[in-house]
Length: 106
Image (cartoon, rainbow, N blue to C red; front, side):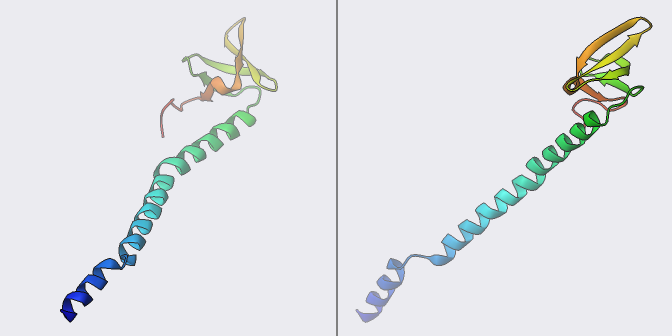
């Protein structure tokens, strides 16, 4: 009878180990998610912003629509691009990628 009482007492106490292992698993999942998804995306966004901030007259660019051109004038949020002789268009900086870079490439 005494041994049955001891066994019932052990089962009534909460298992601290399983709570701790669940917490470790959740923290590990968050770290992995951050390393493989959030960090690379923010790094790519910083590189794109650096490219757009560094645009200068004469740089070769490609629009996200696929037009290749040369920057002729840089404004605050837009740039003027020469697509062909006597053809210039004004394009938002966010619609540009570096010449040779591809949209969607990691």
